[in-house]
Image (cartoon, rainbow, N blue to C red; front, side):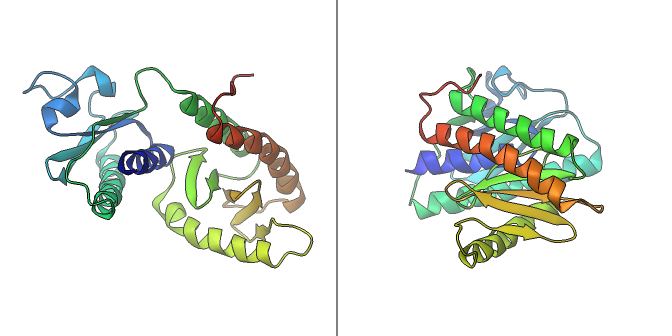
Length: 238
């Protein structure tokens, strides 16, 4: 369905940026969550200088509230990420032959169970970064970015699709296992569960055995959490 596909794109945007919230609205007044003519509103949890908006066409506007006010370079990068998300949203609307933009706000006012699960996943990824030479850890599942330890750098984001395909080829040629492992000078990746994979980016030398051991341990925890995304009747807070 259109709305669920749009929500998935917005979730990926939140997972790969420093945005605290994102919204598809019909005009700037509605996007602000307040009366027409105002620029800021409570629904997006605005912080001064942190709100950016780009038009979607067909009467829609995409707006995101970033964690904090940035300098010029930071604002430029945030806008580029928001515009990239907008292009994906427009393509999704065309694919579904939609005529109007549905109102969507993520995260919702009351954190949904999915947000709690994603936050838990990010904690594990941050733990990997803090306890290893990896500067960034990313979790993907079935081709979609689920979570990352830190906001994704544009170059890392662009490389993920190619790295995921390489890992799939390695897994397909690995005897006795459905999973694969990709090792290079600046990337360590391993697949696990049903179509899930961890990707670690590094700028220095690292011990493969150490990273492998840590990733195996975290992958077990993430597999449990990934199963909850399909069946959110479980409580992720343990």
